[in-house]
Image (tube, rainbow, N blue to C red; front, side, top):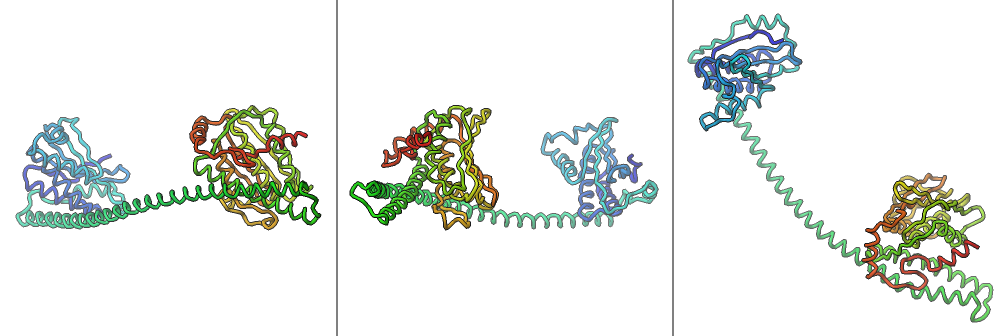
Length: 487
C-alpha cells in the first residue's frame, strides 16, 4: 500500500517549481538513484510542475514511496484542484498550450510510469520511478523517519535559487553536449552506411554482370556438350555396328584372339556411348530441350523389361537381382522411357558396388498423395553420410575399394536427379557403410500438366531421332528387352 506523503509543497509560483525540482533531486539522491536517473526525475518534476502552475495557482506536489510494490517505487503526485484532466492529456489546441503538453509528454518518457486520475474531481498526475536494485528495501520505520525529517524549504533564498538554476543549466549543458556527441556519432554512422550502401550497390552490379557471364558460360557448356555428344555418336555407332559385323563373322572367320580384341572394342564403344548419351541428356535438360512422351503403362511390364535388360549385367553368382511383385499398383501416366532410364541407372549403380547379396527393386503407391515411389535396395558397400549429397553432383565419385574394379563418370545419379525433377518428382538416398544403400525415385502417378506443357513447348526445339536411341533418351530396344525378360 502507498504510504503517506513524505513531503508536500504548494505550486503557487515559478520559484516553487524550482524548489520542487530541488526536492526531487534530493530524494533521488537519498534513495540511491544514479546521476542520470536523478536528472530525469528532477527534469520530469520541473516540467509537470510548470504545467500544473499554468493550469492553476492552487496546485501542489507530494513525494511518496510505494512500499508494497515489487520493486518499490518513488512516487511524485501532482494535484490540480478543480481542473479538467483533459487540460493535461488532450493535444494542444494552440501553440500557446504546446509547451505544457510537451512537458507532460517528456515526463511520461523519462519516468517508468505516468498515471492520470480525476475520480475525486481534481486532476491528479502521478509519476513513478522504480528504486534501484542495489537500494535496500525501505521499511515502514524508515519511511516514517523520512516523513518526520525536515525537508527542503519551499521558499528558497536568492543564493539557493541562483545555485539551483545554475545546476539546472549545467545539467542541460551536459545533456546538450551528450546529444551533440550522439548526433555527431549518428552523422558518422550515416556516412558509413551510405558508403556501405554504395559498396553493396556496386557489388550487386558486379554480381549481376558475373551472373550474366556464368549464364552464358553455362549455355556455352550445354551447347558444347550437345554438339560434342552428337559428333561422338556417329563414329561410336559405326564402331559398334562394325564390331558386331566382325563378331557375326559376316566377312569371314576370326581367330580366338581377334574375336577377343573385337569384343573389347565393342565393350569400350558401348561404355563410351553410354557416357555420351548421359552427357547429351544432361545438356538437353539444362537447355530445356528434353522431350517428354507421357503414356499409360503398367509397372509390372516395366519391371519385366528391366529384368531382361539388366540380367547380363549381373557381376557374379553371389549377387541376385530381385523384382518385387507389383500387380496391385495402378496404371501410371508418365514418360516410361525416363522412368526406365532412372531405374536402369539405379540398378546398374547398385550392381557395381554389391559384391554379394542382392539388389531388390520395388514400387509402392501412396494414393493419398497420388505419388509412386520406386526403390532400388542393395547389400553393397554403402555410402558414408558426408558423401550422400555429393553423389548427386555431376562428375563426383566416392572413393572406395571397388573404385579400380568398376568404371564410371559420375553422371548417372545426377542425371537421375534431373530426370526425376523433370517428371515432377524427387530422388532420395538412405545408406549405411557396410550394410548397403537404398535409392528412391518418387514421381506423380499422373504427369503434372505443367510438365506436359513445358515438354510440348520444348519439343519444337528438341533434336530428332538419333541412331540407337529414341528421341526421349530411352533405350530403343526396350521392347526386345521386355520380350527377353518375359521369356
